[in-house]
Length: 303
Length: 278
Image (cartoon, rainbow over all chains, first blue to last red; front, side, top):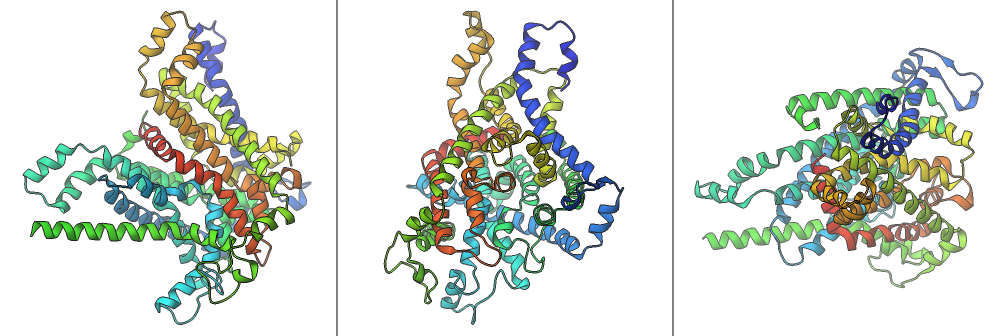
């Protein structure tokens, strides 16, 4: 973006090369990511509904006031919190255990990894559809299994009962995200030099000591970076919920991302949707700053 | 004593790994089994964990009741084109961002990282309006363009990590031999980082193949539908027709699973290495 200033000076071969290499990327990202983004932020302060496109005008904070008065928005806000943190913690812990178990090579490890990591290649939409089928209240296999084992007496409407719905979509999301953490953490674990463990062993450390004094400190940068990225990603991830419940029943599974999608796709109120989006960005920015300060890894974001 | 602990540890490990395997594989198993059941068996209780009569009806049906072959073609065309396009653009930008520090280079990287935080839907309405101005609604071009643009930042970050691993003495030597900058890049550098390029390409392809919401928004016309748009159409307001849905799910997941099976090491290595040096 700043290169345009350079252009006025006679260009050396090198800066010409840099300029032309960056041009396509900057133009495309500017036009199809940043322009719609800023335009969308503008819409948050406008009356902008699909049904009345002739009457678009600036209304200040009206959209924000309207959505904050909606119980559904407030529920989506608190649901987002559970959705992100329960998903994240479970994905991380389970993924970490899996990575630890896979650290030492064993026969067939490659094939095993293929079977437990493949969820990475599937779409959130498809995973949502599959879980929706498994959790079906009448003929879902999950009910059937739980009945067989004797854990439940009658079928549960996992996705139709507001008591269970949020927990159900979170379980599907945890299932989806385990592979991500296992992959990232496994790569980090494999970069730990063996002699660190050897010298810890000579000092008489047992496996628990080794875990907390060698392993975890060594891979801390990966843990911080992957959890930070993952929070942002889960927060902005509507696919699974859209496919499983589309926010229902009675809004009990809406998170901010699906609430916003609902406003655009079904409500046609671009202004209110954008206002929800602005609130999401503010929350994410606050979270990122807080997280980077708390973990003192400001350097991590430095290039 | 120590020996006994070790065998106990090992059997625990095997047990936990086995449990993981079942939990991770079961959903895919279940949708596949469902797709192979005749439709009356899908909805009958007691549930059959293995179909009594294996049937390919759902797979035949899906091609009869919908133009699934067209959706597959469209998905392939869009995903491949956009993955190639993003690769070409991102290789150039990643290369100069890896090799040069100049005024604005930091800001560009920050801007690229920022894009990862943007909630996708905030730009949807403006994008929709833009595409209708360009007359691209219901055209596959609209998807190719937004997919390409959307993946440039992440792929640039990823590829930049790979370029960092290659010493710049390599292209300097080529340039002394009389290569231009661009030929040095194409002839000398790119072959060396082929694994990184392949990983990025596959990553982009899978992302494009799986994308849902933009395609629902831009595409409504039968001849331009991609697989996710069509699958979304199988969801009606109150119900899902599980026969075609299950076979559609299996068909749509086959390409990515095959890619994953063959290139698992490459992708996993690529993602972790590329992100490492972010």
